[in-house]
Image 1 (cartoon, one colour):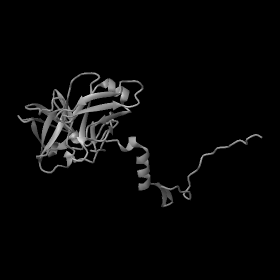
Image 2: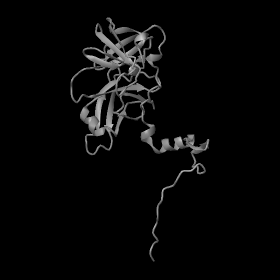
Image 3: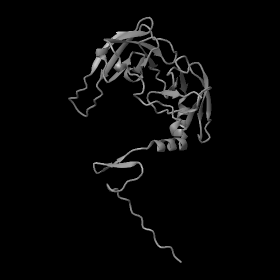
Image 4: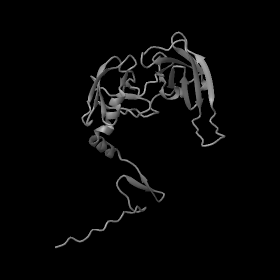
Length: 251
């Protein structure tokens, strides 16, 4: 007995056909995700739900600061010390990018010097949607990475212009509840299922909560790396995440 051939054809979505998780509104299908489905996905996908990165917009932004100026203390990410008595330049614009001129970016530039404490006072009028700060030896994303300081004002971690290629990947570890750095702690970075590459590295975070992962380790474990910190839940590391911050939940 021969098996009759099976003919496949694509399904066509019509306004009258609905699947659980869709609704029709104004004659059009509108997709949504039910809370129960989210719980199921989280239970089935530990990698997705244990991902400890916090999306942009969930932290306070310096762009929303009130007053005529903002006071920012600048830190060197490698030494964890304030960057004192240094000339800086701030450049900002509205984020618009054009293929050809004219381009209404509303670009601004401002120059200032940090004091003996590593603090610099920046006029609010110099800030725009994007804002970066640079010196002869450092660079940083003021709009994206500045964090509120405990005693008022703001802090910003700046990255040195080392010229090392490939440079170690800086990773800042933060408590997910307090948003405070997980500082001076010995921890492990594990590259799980790394195809025979050495899959564990012991590192110690500095006073700002940074560890610096060697470039070769990142290259082999970019998709499978986890950070293991005593007293915290294991968290997957996204080495491609531009802001480099990893928020970790306590056990």
